[in-house]
Length: 154
Image 1 (cartoon, rainbow, N blue to C red):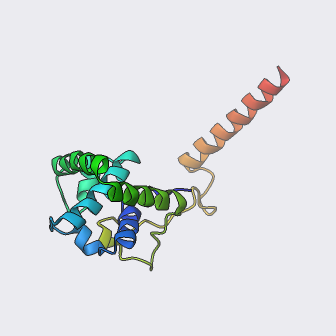
Image 2 (image 1 turned 90 degrees about the horizontal axis):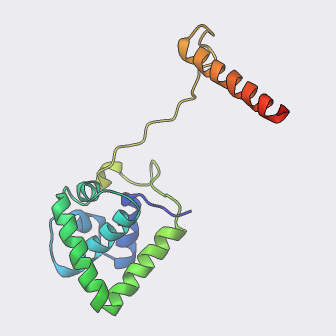
Image 3 (image 1 turned 45 degrees about the horizontal axis):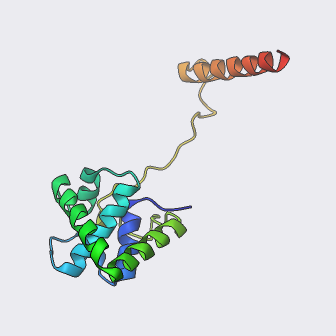
């Protein structure tokens, strides 16, 4: 299963390019860092992230800056064989990687993302059955089962 998290793409880009995550997210504009940043942005946008979100995670950049980087990415992708290979490697690594942003492995603030909340069960078993949400859920469940039974009988 592919990873589509921008933070994971940054970590993969850092690993492949040997450029630190801090440099990728920094305000530095030298060519190697910019090209890695642009490749990450292209892949993140391809995975459905908005340019605003990509810009926010890539060091607080504006969506217009990301749009400009995507235009530059295309120019470099068309003309630079080595850059095409780097982008293909990044895309392949993202497609093969599981989401690996787990607590304790990375500092979430470093990526500009919030720490995920702990998942809680939908219903506490200690809540009385008179709770409106639980009654609604049970009613929907009964109605769904009744509909399924009726459809099977038809």
